Length: 181
Image 1 (cartoon, rainbow, N blue to C red):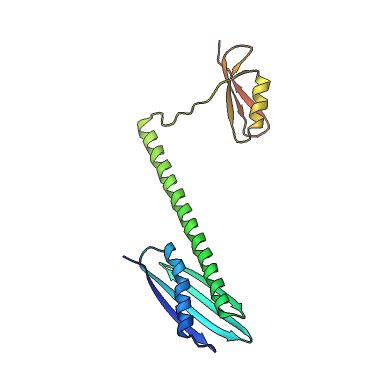
Image 2: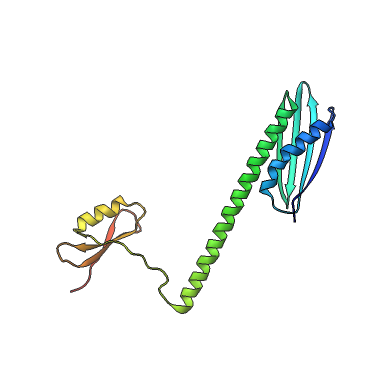
């Protein structure tokens, strides 16, 4: 199914000539790439106020509405500005919808992973990283330098055992996990 563009052009104190209608239809074809199927309803009002020529374009597609009104001494320039504005609005709305759909699909995926892990009790994620030998103080300094990290695993140079230093909830202090014996 192809996109059908339903265009209604009216003029107030300004006649919508065939040349103007053709120009508007040609410029509106730029919007076709953003819509796949169904109908795109477009209302165009051109009018004259003092020496300014005003073009007002409203478009609606599947419940979403887009609108642009510009004025210029040249009607064609006003139409061009309106099309640019509409194209930005459509692109922004499409990007926002894609981001929301992506976030929603990630949330659904996370929920399914949580449900799977609740019922099966298996390890579902493994992260690998290098463990360096260092002192507790060096580990604290390195963790402080990594603002997005909450813990750091390292080999204590004094005991030669694996330790974990972690950031406490207060954000100012640290905790240390040491193995017994």
